[in-house]
Amino acid sequence: MAGVRVEGLLKRFGNVTALDNVSLEFEDGKLTVLVGPSGCGKTTLLRIIAGLEDATAGSVLIGDEVVNQVPPWDRNIAMVFQSYALYPHMTVFDNIAFPLRARKISKAEVKQRVEQTAALLGLSELLQRKPRQLSGGQMQRVALGRAIVRKPGVFLMDEPLSNLDAKLRVEMRAELKRLQKDLGVTTIYVTHDQAEAMTMADKLVVMRGGLIQQMGDPEEVYSHPRNTFVGGFIGSPAMNFIRCSVDCAEASLHAPEFQCKAPSRFVQVLRERGKDAVIVGVRPEDLKVAPVQTEGAVPATVYISEPMGKEMLLTVEVGGALAKAITPPNVRPQIGETVWLTFEEECVHLFDCDTEEALPVA
Image 1 (cartoon, helix red, strand yellow):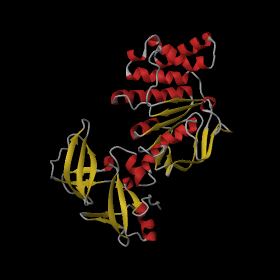
Image 2: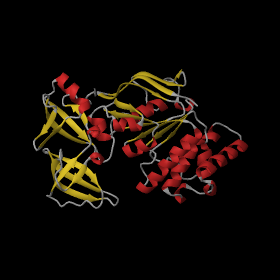
Image 3: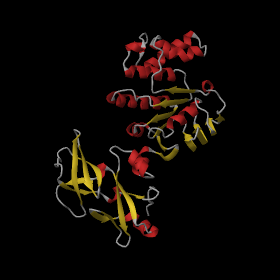
Image 4: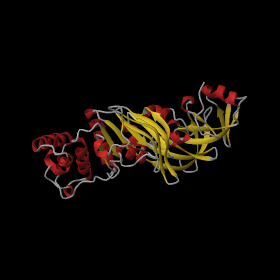
């Protein structure tokens, strides 16, 4: 197997900078997920690692070898695309066997490796079918099989599940994660789906505008977002943000319709910096909704309620902004009704209004 490293990677398309001095290490045998909105540079980074795009500047290393001038077919990588890219006139067996035959491997070894790969992916009964006779999930397995059969040092996956329906996506991402663990192959996975990223990643890399915003363990990124972009992008529904003025003397936060104490871990930094305003972030699942006022509760007006089966998603107006809260399904306030929001101190995040960076804690 092989680790992958990029150093000072820059990519420009004319006047547009797709990657801006990106340096990143993909650990050997781990599954690293690149996540971010469309145009953030994640697919460009993947294609440069694959050798399908040339970097404007910087280096790509696979193992300890700089591979900038190495053609894609000599990089010991296998790529799985968003489209399955299967040959429609070939059987499943022939599609999986294609990269082996291209390398002039013996018929006996081709047969053995294809059958082993098909067994691993549950395709043994489908080897004589054509792609048009397969479901979307089966076609994706064939595309994976064609990558696995080569026994590459690195897997590159560019939104491989995006063409599947929601239920099959959930099933396939679990299978993909299990498969990667079983094979132990270094895998770089690109997606814009943050739920997919959170559930699959050993290491999560959040990108925006060609820059890395944050990377680390998925739980760490979720629990301690470095800025408002990461806080709003990772997590569904997104983190709520409300701009509040700061009373440093009283260590309190003020919005148009409420005030509350600043979390104790932020009091020192608020006083030291003398900030007159901050952005308060609270995740929807951390907001508790009650029909009556309690000490420290914040008033809010129900804007809309959305039943989701096991829970209710409320959108409320609070502090001059809309916020979302997740409640049990039996909590069903009416539109226009006043409710009261509470939250634990440790669930509050504070961000600088100017830089949108998270404030440090004492």
